[in-house]
Image 1 (cartoon, one colour):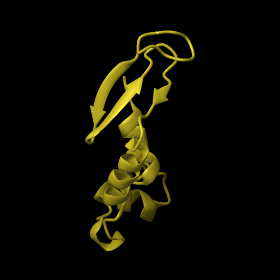
Image 2 (image 1 turned 60 degrees about the vertical axis):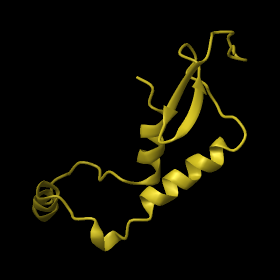
Image 3 (image 1 turned 30 degrees about the vertical axis):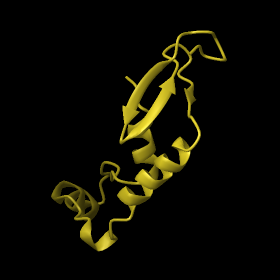
Image 4 (image 1 turned 180 degrees about the vertical axis):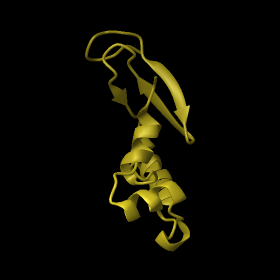
Length: 88
């Protein structure tokens, strides 16, 4: 199948059990029927971990005590979607 934007041949990949079609040139992503629902289900399962079960890394805890900046905590919905759609 060709990209509707620039005519490049789409690449098919599977991420977390969801098949995605993407264009390596313009980086557009196209989903077939039902695939968005699957992405939402996968993301919801990964975000549903109770907050009390997520331990704060020691390095981050030290940085917070010292008033320094720490790295962004992973695991949010944006991070899940970023990992799913990162094709590099």
